[in-house]
Length: 463
Image (cartoon, rainbow, N blue to C red; front, side, top):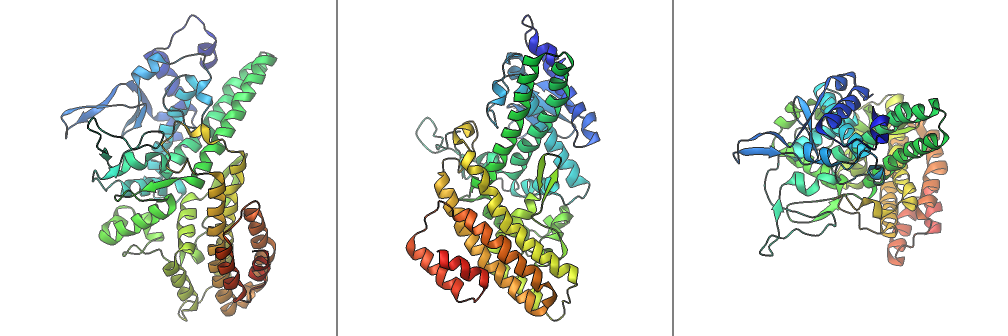
């Protein structure tokens, strides 16, 4: 049906065609069998807004309790032959069958995230959903509203328009980044099964070539979505922008500190935070965090673990807590726990390199339809920022490793290997083409040389 709809010149889009295809996309979603039973409804409204006493209008798509709703007007007006929906990693709305496919899988991924939370999972999907739910508890309309060019929205009198957290930070939210990322993976799988195989079976070389290009474009778009994590910023109530990781973890910790019942509402948080909203240092020893795995051709990252661990290694109070945990005579770590800490330190530093690798191939014009704050940052500034982050984290990581090695000398060889093989290599990669301010370089150099750490000394010579 998908291929027939694209080829029929005498056919125009309709609610029936859009609904049939959207529900078939749900049936073919591979994330969770429960998604096959989800209904996708085509309508312009989704329920009643009791607060404002009116119907809730649908803007492109929305996932609600029992079903998803896609905007009827957009579907009725969409093209059945265009390929425009593949041109950007986050198209503004539904314009053709490919953007319909993307939006359908995007909303279904939100359903999956909620399933994971309800199931009590601690994976990135569950934690992204929980994080979003906690941050959205801030209902105050004090955030600056922006358009897709990141300009402040003004009312008819020229006054700045204020909005809530959700609207102000939507495209920089991990729950949305992950939904786009997974949606493109599902699009790629669907195109492989239904478009590439279709033309291959017909021995249509031109059709097969185009289908292969569509398949490849899904992979490119998925990568482009992932890059958003490298530059995404969020804004707080005072109109101050900050890296989304810093915003997420600080606000989550503050929310728990103000209302410890949040941990009871979302028990998965108890693995990471205490009742005061402080990150538990034991996660570095008891959990595999910030890990990267491969699932077929997909890179699967523990993105919530990345947020937690990245923030912890940038924050002096959290570093002190980790050191205290190691030095506490009542904490007798097993060899596995000590080795896990070493691996987790490596994972965090590895993430700095991973996030910057795709930047050189990134066309920021492709983010024109997103409201991701930070998309107007230059690649040069981003690379400099990540190098500085790495230098700061590396100092803290090697200090933690040194204290760990003093108490558990059996991990010494592993630490030495990490420092000499990986940590220096990551520095060389991140420093390539980046010129740091001489005063900053001198400060870091002197700090590194005082440690007597071999890896830090080698890096200091290059600064």
